[in-house]
Length: 262
Image (cartoon, rainbow, N blue to C red; front, side, top):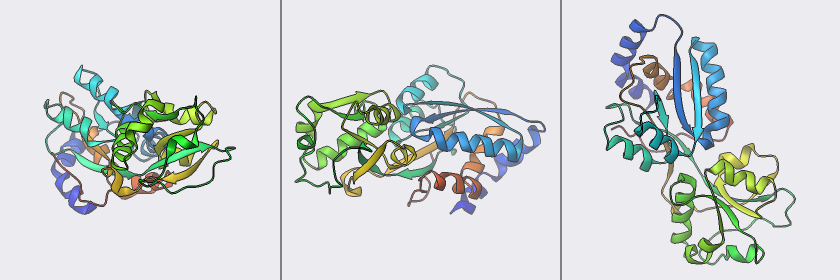
């Protein structure tokens, strides 16, 4: 699969190589849940190529709106398809540069010192019974944050949204939701498995069934309006074996389906 991607990018890579004889700076807008992995990617990529990655992390919705407003991003990595498609619909994504880069899972977390034991989440689970009368469940805002959107879809499919929705603490991004649980300000949180894996002060008490929400995929694409050929070289590297190793270290998987292009 990866060799087909590299073949598809071959002509663009030839052009990039011909026009980038010196070190370049590449601006990458990436979903907040990629903070640790992409920071490591930037270090490894700089060592391998000499190019420098300027990273900007926030919720996928915030970053997409910034790009639409003219922010100078060379590459955009979203935590869901919605915001990438939103940019594509405005012709802000370079043709044939869109690929599904990573996959993730959705989990329920509690503070590490919580008395809550692991549970199985299904249509019979009452999440509100696990928190106090005044407590809330931390989550990325379901109105625009991908992790929150996935959470809402899962809760709706499990028949729990109506009961849980009034008890949510809506955060600006998934890392902010994670922080609420880490600090003990929320007894439960819904985040990505990779976020929980890098946190030392939380524990996973349940994983949402895969069939309760759409597959969690992270599409990547080069933005239009930018003229940095080094972004093509970076995109190919992110889809390759060296990046595989780094992303796997942080708990990400490659999508099971073929990369989506648009």
